[in-house]
Image 1 (cartoon, rainbow, N blue to C red):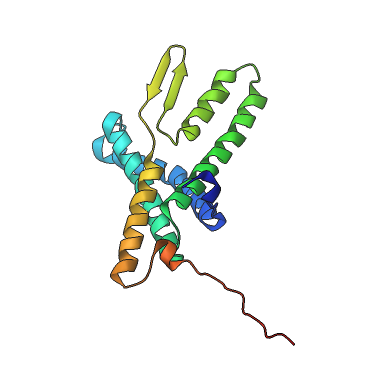
Image 2: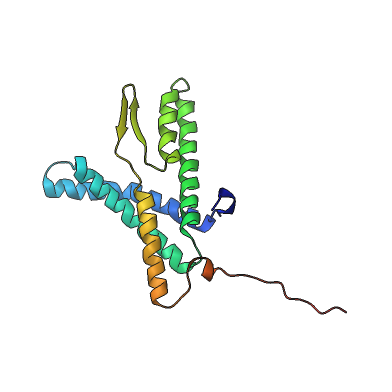
Length: 176
């Protein structure tokens, strides 16, 4: 599949934007509960696991609902939509960073590298180069949500993917 055949799904983009906001605001209460239970802040692998699990859950549920409502969604189109959305958001934030500190190109580049690589490459610092743990949780959640949504639809006997796409054919009118 080439980039020419990928479709941007505006409906999914809206729901993914809501999911991004939900994960941003839900992280603090979840981490506060962890703090209350453990008595110290979550750190290391526990922090990565808790925040990653939260993001995976939110994006998984969002994608499963999106697939249930429109079963012709494909994984490539859904991931393309999420990629474009994250890249657009990071670009807007990078413009804000550039306006705030025009001489600090490293800050702008650090903000753009993660979305360009879909969260696989996370840069904490350029001098010295420090790479952080990959943050591909939205991608994992999207994949799991799509698989679960499709499985639920096929279990009910409904078509999924391109087989479920609605095709409108023009009606032939009789000649006068």
